[in-house]
Length: 95
Image 1 (cartoon, rainbow, N blue to C red):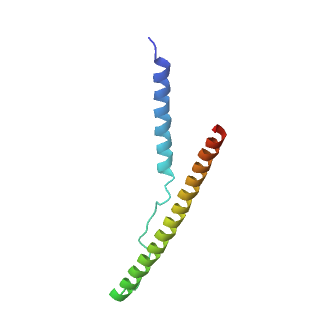
Image 2: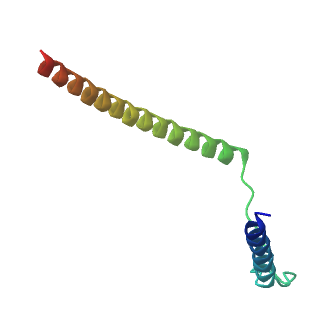
Image 3: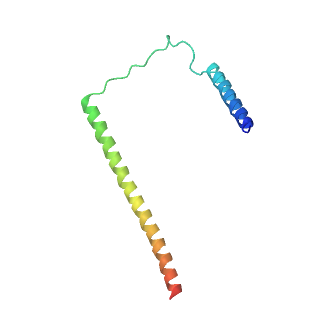
């Protein structure tokens, strides 16, 4: 029967993968006790501060969107110019 070699390779691959998982579990980076860790206290934001932050983020996103639209428009114009110039030059060669 054919296929014994491929099945043996698949079994070896599965076995090797299982061995790798076991090694990863032994070397866990976040093992230990965190009972002595002190959590930081952050000040609460007022509704006015939240509104200012929201407006600032919206303004920055609007400026970024305008820059992206301008860059994409310039790229489209450049690609269209190159395409038209290549077609026009090939048209002149044929005439």
